[in-house]
Length: 266
Image 1 (cartoon, rainbow, N blue to C red):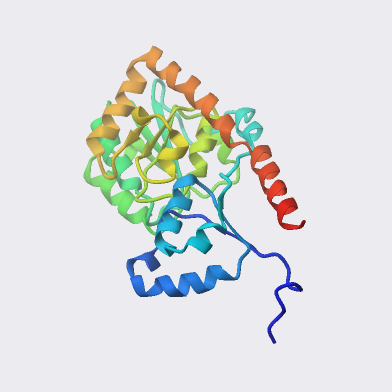
Image 2: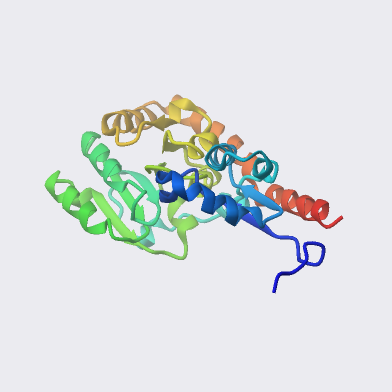
């Protein structure tokens, strides 16, 4: 039985990705239009997520329903976290630790970071937090490059903020990402961020100097080396990231959602 429009509840959905496999097939555009038509608002987690879904749906009426409310992070949780990296793994004197937090599965690209670390000074180590089907490929790549002792796969952890706090640089290497929440978490923890230059994620990071092309191992290695070898440059990027993350607080996100709910309930 169909519910009359005036009696049904207000419906809101969220769009989290700048891309999905359905968009490979133009015939599925009609299905997506039908699906999204039932919602009063479609909340997109980044400006580029909105741009991409508007382009995909190619519908003026649906475009009027899409709005952007960027994701938010509990900044205090990461800024005030203690450093407990040494409790999770044995640290080497003078070593520098590059962290990547993610589900180790497509579209994430941890292998590019492993290859970049192989091009860096032997004091540079990689810390990977998260698990997934790419772990075997990661271990094999590290072994083939002769850097297994410098690659630390910690698996899933409940105290991610405390492990990030002990690292020197945060990296998010990926084929696509609608937002890249972990990039903000790195920033809030006081780390400079290096990220793949893809829609959504590049919008969060902002600074072109902190972005590298997908799979560009040499560029990533060069950027890691520059941050670790130039103290003034490192501190300037830390200050930038500390300021940048303030735009993505969970309080700001909550207030924008609340305002949207109020408008739709009038």
